[in-house]
Image (cartoon, rainbow, N blue to C red; front, top):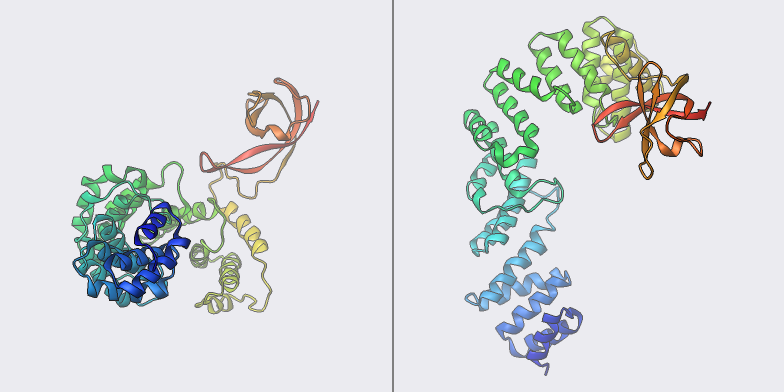
Length: 417
């Protein structure tokens, strides 16, 4: 018969492959609680949950007061059922698993993982009753700086985010606003997301001026396209159509240009263009939204009806990139004349300037023109042997500054003069 001490030694050293068959033999012959717990540990580590789950049920029923067995049962349920729960699974089934684990009185870490799994799924499904029921069972005071792999947020910040969402959608908006204002120090890095929720709370309370004030601050400076879109929509709903439309255009030109993210925005722009009695421009936006939805396999809604009602061609094969280029020209035309728009900016050729800021080892420098205009330049684009103050001829093209999160102009095709 296998040696229990040897099996334990192998398990503790991390040699699960050798320990596993020994624990199986021990359990088959002795039905010992230590053999059961050791075998469960090894099966868990090897992710053999088809064997581990029934064994965990059996072992816990026989040894309910043995702490090691109970802990192995808890983690077998977490890893074998909670972690593997399908995205399209029924929320009630997940709640049953969570209830089963919680009834076992798991330790703080296991409890937090279990409850968070349910909270995340409840938010995804929009089940605010379930979310509000469970979030109060988890105190933010026990949460640490653990970062969720999917969101990049700490568990504490996620708790506040779920809590505020739950309050807003259950019509406790004033409490949601209070939490945001009083606890903002906990989530200062994600402040814009919570300020956005505050705006949503004000909208729900029909305090539209307060919501507009929040959004106005959010879109000042470098802004995310989706905030610009939401602010524009809110302005339009308050009959500030021209101002709102301007923000929809800003949202359209803001990076990134991922059509699948902006498909609703394209439709919204098209709807306003219909009001502006610009049917040809509206058709292009509806066609773009349709092309993106078709590519993604999404439903088309009423896009065909909108296109047809404006006299558009339903049968035309639409290339998304081509339609984006056409829409960008339209966006450019609606921007204020004095705005420094980079949309569809044609490469400016024949410019002259001199190289500045060239430092050995640094991957960028600048090209300064006689008119004191400065352009970013990658040192890899410089002709061999270029030095500071070298006069060059160059072109300018549209680029994107990731550090500053905004579009910019870049010097390219440099030639020494």
